[in-house]
Image (cartoon, rainbow, N blue to C red; front, side, top):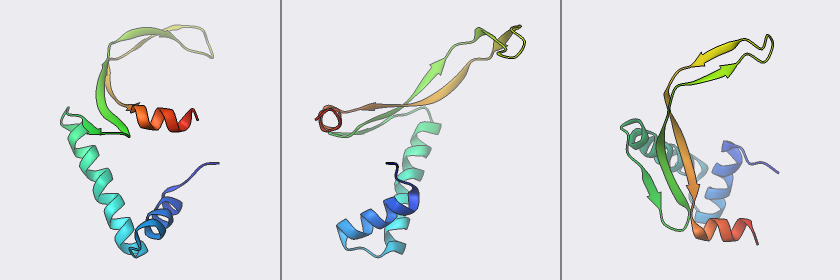
Length: 93
């Protein structure tokens, strides 16, 4: 099963008693705050849930899957999530 943004808003509204409009605002604000911190190179730690951080991936050689030709893959920064112990335990229960 997979949950989309609309279903997440419904779940938050149901759990908190907030309206769907307020739940959507809260979720958007949370996503914006995390995105803003990561875009500045920082990290966000939610104890018991996990840590969002930025990881610098170095340049490397790759292969074009169609032709087999070697290509250069440029360096870039990627967002990374490391689950906390409580979340890992819950998932592995």
